[in-house]
Image (cartoon, rainbow, N blue to C red; front, top):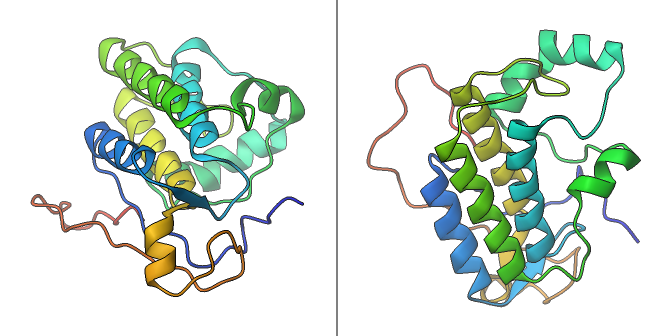
Length: 196
């Protein structure tokens, strides 16, 4: 049965300021046993993020209604780009077919896709319009990808953290550990929101 990810408590508090931080976290999770509090495995999550990154270069895998595009540009763009990214969005079936990898995707396959997507973002400057938020600059797309990644990665908890906190491994309703990332040496400029 699918988990309603809008209602999951105890997710990790994750914030990425760079793609290097994202890869470091992904590598750390790939090196240990991970409990998913959501619907996707670590491998699926990482590959989904990599595919999304490539999609921002290659084009939209799905279309959205004009109402959602209007609402997205007027009210959702800032949240989608700078976070916190809202969980629980259901992709249209055409997009899900392209962006949601099978649950048999291994962490190694997912990590390879993530690294490939990041390499393309760093090497290429072409970006297409976001299907909901509309046209984004390269910098805005980078913020989007980091915010999007933080949301998805927050559902993945090292099993050792769950056991240390007294949570039952694999139980979606048990009390869960929350790991705070270490403080960043370069704080955000005044007025900028923290991406959690």
